[in-house]
Image 1 (cartoon, helix red, strand yellow):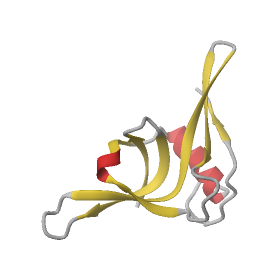
Image 2 (spheres, helix red, strand yellow):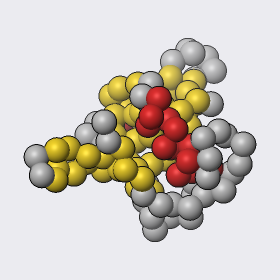
Image 3 (cartoon, rainbow, N blue to C red):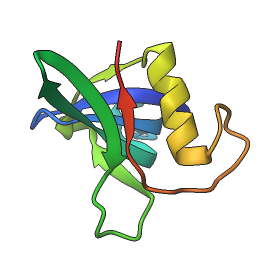
Length: 110
């Protein structure tokens, strides 16, 4: 698995640890398995756009699930600062060494 930005068919931007789920016969991608997803939340303040990471589906206990490949329109690599913030929010540091989850929000600014 690796951290990716997924853009969904409804326009959500998710940052998550992602792996592809492939059909064993056709080798086509049928879904994406996401772990510890966070929604990118964009805000405008004083004419500047800022972004934050917020917990995906805060009412669910699950931290891993699949998204249908038909629901995902793009898979992108995150910027380095986004990756660092994601690791800090999800794991409590800048590496994947821990599995703690706080569900908090972090600001992403240029």
